[in-house]
Image (tube, rainbow, N blue to C red; front, side, top):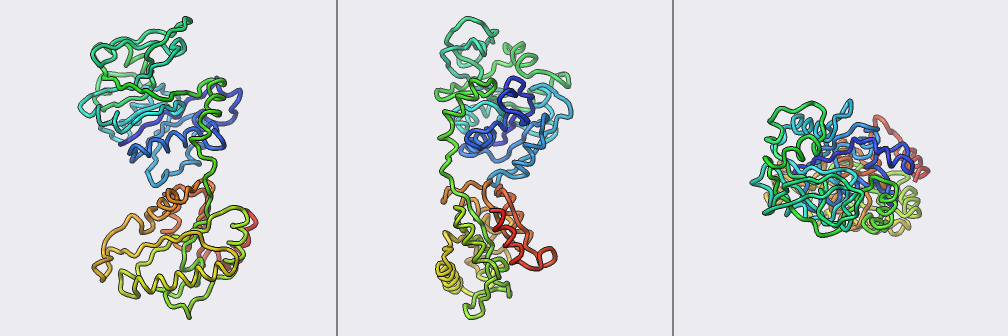
Length: 402
């Protein structure tokens, strides 16, 4: 499910309380609203995000990078404001999208997005409507036989009814007609052509809020703080060979283990600051017949015992014994866990309730760094002989910055 999120608005009404940030980056318990929204979409099967960005777009691009919890993030940049319609149309054309879920980056709706997506598969256009006690701020939507038939203007009169929640299923056919470069999707396409488009609607029964004005943003800060999960842990992710112990190639013999200088001091400092210590290690030597999985376990247990003795116990270790060119048939296959894929990190995030943005990863290969970035780890440290000939000095610097 490809998801297009409109995140380029100026957010003029919100700037009195959220300064120097694009509106979707407004913090809810120290987490950007857009992060919360995208995490919800991941739960329902989003496998690619396209963010339509403009105002202070660098804030969004720096935060999300190219991946969000392993899911690709791409950017459709508006060099000048294109309106909602122009922004959506540009994203569809730029990334050749046959269809996509489209929504606003300042609205949170408790919704089964997967069910909505599946129900709309034979439609050119579908939208989500929400029953609210006061539709005056939004404007009512009239329906007939499961389809939206008329959009009414905003009113000063308090009236309960269905409103447009700003969530759409769209296909590229919607933009095949003659359209200007800049236009409002709602005001210049959807509403005036609703009788010919006949959009099927999906009714949202649960929570709805947009953060477009200070009062509703304050409400979101109160009501969504539990969604953020402030209890999440932060982690120090460590590759093993070359980061914890000296890499002498296919390391598995206990009597030949040499620990990298400074690693225990670093981990003790990380523990003191509340970090979980999590090892994520490729172990292709198992697939290539260099040593057995039992050999790996013995070495792992030795390392963990040493860390415990040094008062910095390792909280978890994830390993990948698979390799496409392995000679041991059981392990000869590609794996989502094998770095540069982010599988091991993402499993740790889920199983140990990790906030990746507050976490650190240290690796000595580009594949380690790529895996960290794809998983969305906030800080990655590339420990190479060329750039960091003295790991203990690097560890000292990291320790001081925790």
